[in-house]
Image (cartoon, rainbow, N blue to C red; front, side, top):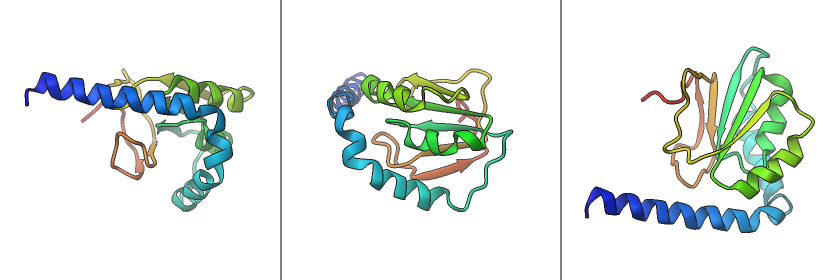
Length: 141
């Protein structure tokens, strides 16, 4: 199979996933927030953030993790493919000034001259690395 065809298939799958999460956004927190909070508590319980840190949450969804860490860090950035999930995140995080939300594909989005102290990608559909990556620099390989 050619690379061009693989990329088209990949984008088709991503589009289907985006549409799925767009459709599920209104009910997502009601259905999954308890489960997500338990995952975050388990994964991040051993980490202590400082006010100087910047974190990147790939596949941030409705912003549950961003809300949890916002008071502990300098900047928190959430990236998600679903515009509707980000709309829900914006409602949740509206009063928090140190959070930025970006609608993008985490596999192809590039940060220019940006750095995060901690990056998370918990059970993101497009990334099999589950957990936290301390001292990651987005956009570098």
